[in-house]
Image 1: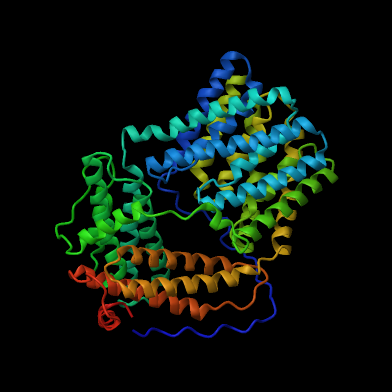
Image 2: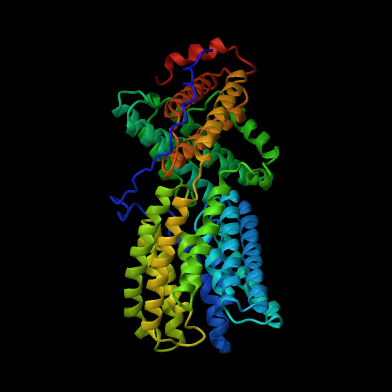
Length: 577
């Protein structure tokens, strides 16, 4: 079967700078649909050890238990079987970072050495969090905790006890993160499936507005979002591991898989989709009731479930393969190390007593490209400046006593998670006073001194952090697009060669999602050669047509065994143009 031929590789043109935007950077968006889960979890996970230490009169140890307690922010998007493993690794990673920081702090008092270690730790934490795709809040909490403990007075004899407190806080966080499984054991999978259904319905609406085709910017964006949501739903079902844990559990997951199949069909054939039915099924996934069952039973549905079972038994990509010398993560890691080091040393040069604040500010900026990093820098500065004003207002109440200090920190932690998904700067308004109050568990300090240090460190960290992102160029971004296009073409050929291999179709969906992510990342780089935009568009459209054709054939009861390419070409007649 023939497809749109890829355009030749573009000639390499001299690098050119791209404009860094200001419009819309501070505009609030829609909150995450599960914002209350990390918000409530972090409050409970911190309250238990904090109140225990308050009763024991040892609030000076809060920093070490808090390191473990903040692990409760992670993995809320994962099914509980996968969440148990992920949270265990998060606690282990947090403890390892704290261990390196504590041992370093006990062996040297040189601020220059501490900044260097902090920069290397921040880069390693950024790389590992991106490679494992652990999700929000990413490396930031790890870097905040390890950088703070680097500058805490320490002796080698104290290290084991402090690490034990971190592990204890992590154990509490693990239990808090897993507790909802008792009430809603399939909650994460249900939410992922509902997102896929809603995204497919939105694409069907956008395609209808565009005249039933995939043309138009709104339809293109909706299609990319729907493809990502469908892929995430399959990944959620796959992340549950074996399906042999009880008949009711197996049936619930099969029912969810059938709904994801419906979302995938709507993505392939938006003109034939029923957006109202898709949204109705999504609404039915709220709570703990029975999973909705579509009235019609698709002929190829059994093949879908068998394909899912085969993928569950298949091998997983090892982590080291994402960290090879050509990995797109490495330029971002280098930016993080250089930017954090510059920020820390810049703070030291100005005589600020807490250079780790500048280091953490720089570490918080680094996103997939320079444009997003710039956006985060603006958001960080605005949020921190408003946050220090909030600290000035809260400090009189927090200084009334240790109980008031704990209540203030817990309220700010909840507020940060409630707001940060709307826009990073809104969350920073709560994070900043909370970070300042954490320094006062050992002793109350003068608010004016803390505010001045925080403002200066924020500006130093943001300016030098963004400068490092601009200077440390990522010339591999365009190469990553080329590799992603080739991966889509290989996955498309495999899907066309064997229409019964539903796993091949899902690999094509994953390749298309990765291609869109690579294209978006490269588009926001500062110095960059001309990007192969036409190749990307052609590869995406050909890939989505192949998905549409294979779904159409399988939905009609065909697709068993290998089909000649001309049959796939015939199916294109009904696929989006």
